[in-house]
Image (tube, rainbow, N blue to C red; front, side, top):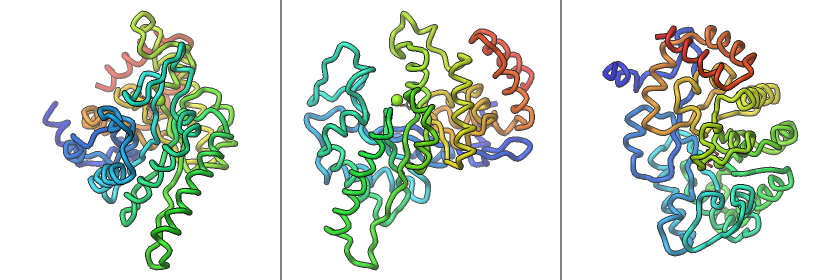
Length: 329
Ligand code: PEP
Ligand code: MG
């Protein structure tokens, strides 16, 4: 089987009946890029910029960030790379930017911090755009969005960075700065009820299934005492994911998923049935997920999904999916 999984690495991620999807990787370090290329990744669906900010003693400068992002974009030249703006707070902290709160996951996190500190945000956006010059494979993604006001404010700052760079460096008509696509993460449940409003503002949606599950079910994703309650296959999570897919399709907004759900073949298959076309996952899961996709029929997945969406408990979803995977071989 391992040899077969390996063989599929450079074949497309298409079902037996020809339904194709893109498989991308989640990353945060430049180490391992070569491996990702080798396993046949179609690009980077989530580059967690906070990771390179972590083991340092101060914020990286604009020049340092530009060099870092350039390396990532160059490694994947010709393939899309979605970089997420700084997502600290919650469980991720920077030694030189301490945040002490009683409820960190409900507190000062992600976009909330960078909008309160536009100097941090602007330097990061400027660095990304400079790094993208001449390459053009960058997309910018905003984490922890919970309101339209935040999106408006972030886009205003992105436009400001674009305008400043253009006047500083790229005022020549033959050397135009590329304007990257801007998207939002769907990971705070409230925005599920504002997808229509968001669709008018951004270029793409990317579901963060890790936080979406945590917030939908009110279960700390890192607390072992409630770990058994934290489950992607809870009917409420699956129905939300399905609803997001339907809304994005009606509004024609490109949709991807970058939480850990797509690492599991079961999760990946259900997401494909829902209509997700871009699945981002850890590099080490990619070959296995691709192999499974190449051995199923989309038509069959749709039927499985219909059945799954009618189930009312997490346990029944697990046992039904287990049966189906056994049947699929
Ligand atoms: C998520 O929440 O699903 C996600 C991809 O972001 P992170 O795990 O970095 O919070
Ligand atoms: Mg998240």
